[in-house]
Amino acid sequence: MRSVFKNRTVKWVLIAAFWLLVWQAAAWAVGSKLLLPSPADTAAALVSLCGTSAFWKSCLMTLLRVFAGFLLGIAAGSALGVLTAASRFAEELLSPLRSIVKATPVTSFIILVLLYLSSALTPLFIAFLMVLPIAWTNVAGGIIATDKELLEMAEVFGFSRMKKLRAVYAPSVLPHFISACTTGLGFAWKSGVTAEVIAHPSFGMGKAIYESKLYLETPELFAWTAAVIILSFALEKLVMLLLGRIVKWK
Amino acid sequence: MEVKHVSFSYGEKRILDGVSLSLTKGRRVAVMGESGRGKTTLLKLMLGLIEPDSGEIARDNGERPSVVFQEDRLLPWFTARRNVEIVAAPGCASEEILRDMELADAMDKLPKELSGGMQRRAAIARALAFGGSPLLLDEPFKGLDPEMRERIAERILSYAGEGPILLITHDEREAELLKCDEIIRL
Image 1 (cartoon, chains in turn yellow, cyan):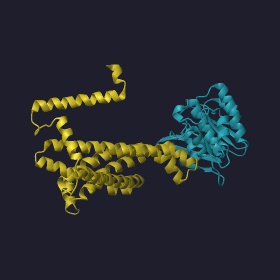
Image 2 (cartoon, chains in turn red, purple):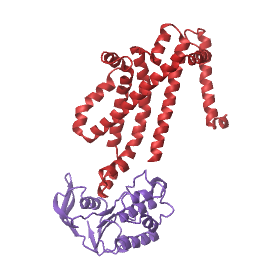
Image 3 (cartoon, one colour):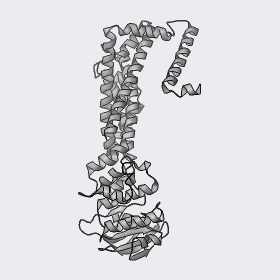
Image 4 (cartoon, chains in turn green, purple):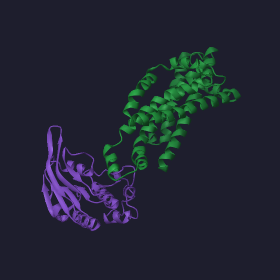
């Protein structure tokens, strides 16, 4: 058994198979597709959904909203991180805003934002809002944690501001930035889809999840959820691949 | 560079009390003393990283010291070569300096892939490539065996030429290796 587990692919296939079996056993035990559809019911619902244009359009719209919100959140959060790490005044002035965004329940924000923005833009804005403090905290933390001895060295050897940024700060902040991207992407998906459930845009995976629940189409609800997980996983891999390229380029 | 009656305290504790030294052309000064006697503090003062409580540190116009810190302070994400090249004066043969520091086979390795002694030599190579004056060396031979110390000391002297050197050490033999003509005990 131990030798089989040494092969990574085999190991993951076995782990996936184990959890599918647990799910299947639970579905048998419950005995109702309405309460807990089996993996096969879910797969069938997913295949059936894949044959409709509405499915692909919903996936595309959610993907665009989540990704745009994520990118904007990372950009604005990083800029605020740099600003607040560089200026004590800026940190003191802006930190209450970060604390409020972190502590406020996402549903309160969704309902509030719906007063000002369209149902199509609300999920994008919510994803942005959830990613913002994550990028902000991580980037500021990375800058503050930059090795003081290396900064002294850079000072003594006359590094220009740009050289200091490229050779000392950027590589120090990079692990914190990558961490912000992985955590932020997860939050962007969860909050973006939740916002779609509440905001009901014309097309969106969250809206589809809500409608599946409304019409008691539990296998479809599971299928949509599976689609969200698959897309979220794929987007995370893509972002990590791009970040990996940037690191290699450096 | 000239240190004139410099005193410095950390809180209530006086670390340096009226220290003076002069680093004129060709002069080599060793500063010795037990741990905690202010040797590294003196280096920081000379580098302008901290200000003295009293006294003065006079620098010539445009004077830029080269330094080997007590810690290697290599950029961990760059190879030994890039660590040297990034500070090298224009036209400086960084690779040759690295070879002279006996790092020919290690120059494309990251600091974490180098032994302690190799990292030390990379830090010395960086200071030599920077080409500043005076050359300030804080325990430069830490982690090097006696034969290696001799060879590296010779090459440091060769690169420094007539430039003044300040050596911080607790080992008098190192002052001899760098042919110091004055020893200041703290």
